[in-house]
Image (cartoon, rainbow, N blue to C red; front, side, top):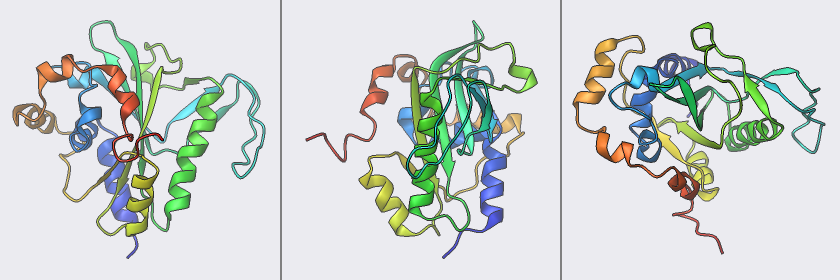
Length: 220
């Protein structure tokens, strides 16, 4: 089966809002628990759909990636949504950034994985964010921890899920409707259902992010 454009567009639109993004992270708990404040989720997660960065150093075309950029040039990242974790009190980024890759129509495993590889190449050259106007007060420099999250649909080919698992990359299957993207009620429901463990989240060890993907494929 093939993914319909409507499925992709609906999920992209939903995840463009903090409530929808948090609902998505609920399906992958290690990322849910790095949200700085469960009591103030709106101020803790900055969502950037189809994000743009400015690279600090030139990127030369190498291998299959074929990317060429000069220092200071802006570029659209090949991910779908970037989620920046922020301290709600100090209004600064915490150093954790999650890059969401949604399975696109007519995209196969190699295409999806290549988008992550290209993102890695671009971020490795040093970067700063081109932030939305409402978030321009944030320091826009690069993060200490960069992690991907792949989202597939029930109709996505099984080889994509199999390939992501084999590569040790975190993936979830999106089957149910997320809360409405602009609904304040949706955010309240997320907090009220008890699945956001505030105490566990606030005690979460950021170093545990380094172990994501190692459970299925321990290093030899």
